[in-house]
Length: 189
Image (cartoon, rainbow, N blue to C red; front, side, top):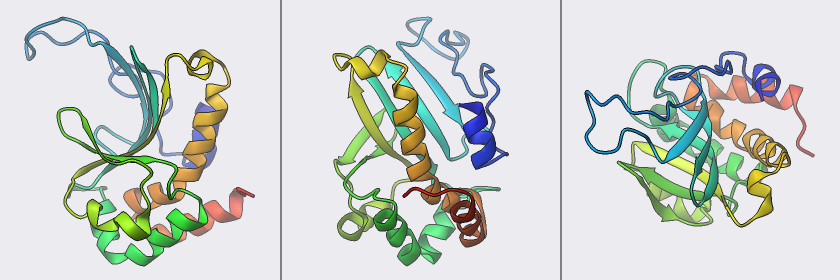
């Protein structure tokens, strides 16, 4: 997926390194009690730790993939201010790029809590007001052969391309310019 992300947004880290794009399976037992290993595997593509990012999450039930948005304040985290400033434009993104109804919206706390299946911005935008850590994702159950097929790359890449315009509002103080550049270089028709 590295060439795809490098073309999409060159600042996104793509090198397969633990604690950057790959989450370690083993836990640091100095800070954790219980089992020494995680029961999931996470691959994530962002600019830095706790950045808004694209992800693929594997566990015993299947896999999830989508976009994590960090709505906390902080340096280089822009979704909070852009959500308030560009709410109408974000609504247009959900409509134009067919995001409405195609992703579940979850709030990330210790574990994701599904807030709304088939999130539709025009009806559900108020649900985004309070959460600081947001997931827009799709799930594929383990029983579905797609979850362990090379075709999963096509599905995730297609979804990441569809979600990228929303990502623009999370990583730039001027998301409209970033969105225009994307629309010049990529066509989703």
